[in-house]
Amino acid sequence: MVKKPYRYFGGEYNIPDMKKPCDVRFCMCVADGYEVGMSNLGVRILYYLFNSLEGVVCERCYTPFEDYEQYLAKHNMPLCSLETQTPLKDFQFVGFSVQYEMCYSNVFHMLTLSGIPVLSEQRGEQFPFVVAGGPCTVNPEPMYKFIDFFFVGEGETPWPQILADYRSFKGSKKEFLQFVDDKYDCLYVPSLHPAEYRGDRPVTLPSKTVKRNVERDMDSVFTPQTQLVPNMEIVHDRAVAELFRGCANGCRFCQAGFIYRPVRERSAENAFSLCKNLLESTGYDELSLSSLSTGDYSGLQQLLEKLYPYAAEKHVQLNLPSLRLDSFSGSIVQGNRKSSLTFAPEAGTQRLRDVINKNVTEEDIFRSLSQAFAQGYSSVKLYFMLGLPTETMQDVEGIVRLAAQVKQLYRTVNPKGRGVRVAVSCSTFIPKPFTPFQWCGFASREHITQCQRYLSEQFKKLGVSFAYNDYDSSLLEAVLAKGGRSVADALYRAYLNGARFDAWTEYFRYDCYKSAFEETGVDVRDVVGERQAEDVLPWDFVDVGVTKRYLRREYDKALCADVTPSCTAKCNGCGLRSWGFCTQTQGNKKL
Image (cartoon, rainbow, N blue to C red; front, side, top):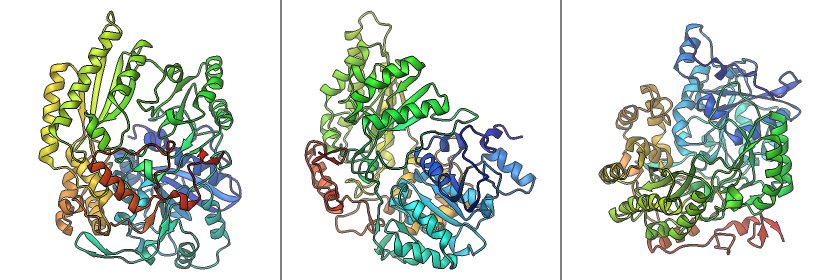
């Protein structure tokens, strides 16, 4: 019995025309469950973009859960698309959006269920191209054996050209791969570019410099004015409008803040039109204004002045996620639901917040929370990280002190209130490529266990809810993030051992990976260990626009707890000026 068949058979509202004449069929895959995949904004944009092209039809597929997997096996059926139930192996392209490293095992699973060989070298002319995009492609090497080509960066402009090239191309698959690898800087065909490793460390890298594609103008870039309305509840079951891309704040732990640079804003007029069209074409009564740091959008106040009256008239609930502590204000959040407020101080002391360049002070924290409590908020979620570079137990104790001060602040602001609910979540810091901390090692099990045990005891006394990440899942993510070609065989072996849905706590099995690493000779501690400035990193052949020299300079400043101001305050010389972007801009449009 399939518990939630809506996951697998499509029929959602706002599906494009699947019956139009076409000679290219593309299946857009998210290597996660329907509820997660349907919430992905990047996939949504490309789905509507591809379906707007002449001669191209794009369908979708998500990773099936065990009940549907058994159904397919029982009926001897391959994995098919949602829209037309076409087997994935019958498409010309099967594209995976890899949003996070923990979905890699599901890529193998979907290919296996489709009857498509997992290894790219085994896929002949009768099989589709297997391609991948998304943030994880800035380090494509752990998956180099399995993907025909990677797309690095934002795809609205190059992808229509790539599909047009395919429609007119007369050669073989191998010849087409050579063609696109030569023509497009943002494409990487790993089979054409060997690399040499000594153990788990690269000695020589692929010969091609792969350059991240950046869409320059948010007002003119392709933007769907609608979205699919699911037949069942999904993770983000609401209309979602993207206000801008990039982030100017430069938090040193945040990969997105570096690989999505520079900031490119949508005009307030364009954003309002988008919000209105999304709501009217979907019937949603909830709207989320989405970006990496929504409160930093320069046109936010202007947008909200139009949006609040419209939302009130149409009975639409507004959500503003990703508000920084220093961008919170009463006028901004008046439309937000009052149930709970989420902030991310990230570290418990000002010294450590300076190390990670959070650029938030305790004064910012308590001023923002005072405003929130005065407006009626009575529940606060605070996010921190454990295992940050230079962390000591004093920093961990600061997390407890901060939570206690939040409870005291609520009593001061609302002495007659019923009390505040404080929830603290502590993830384990993972050094990611293209951040100043890419040279850092992953924290030891002993240190993280000590911190988690201490916080559990202290928060129990305080009456504060506490959640934290499993160490093994964080360790695996660090391996997948920092690893190179040497881990590829282990990843596939772990899948064969039973790994599935690694990002889901109830399905995650580290033993599948532990034995795979042992069988293939991967030294986990070396993969996630500290690196020196002169070391070759597996992803050094990818150019995201931010230079390695700049990242190293930021790392050195971190060790001195020296902060770097936001890009909106001054140019810090990250390297993107050489790409034609300049700080004398607002939303990167020249003043």
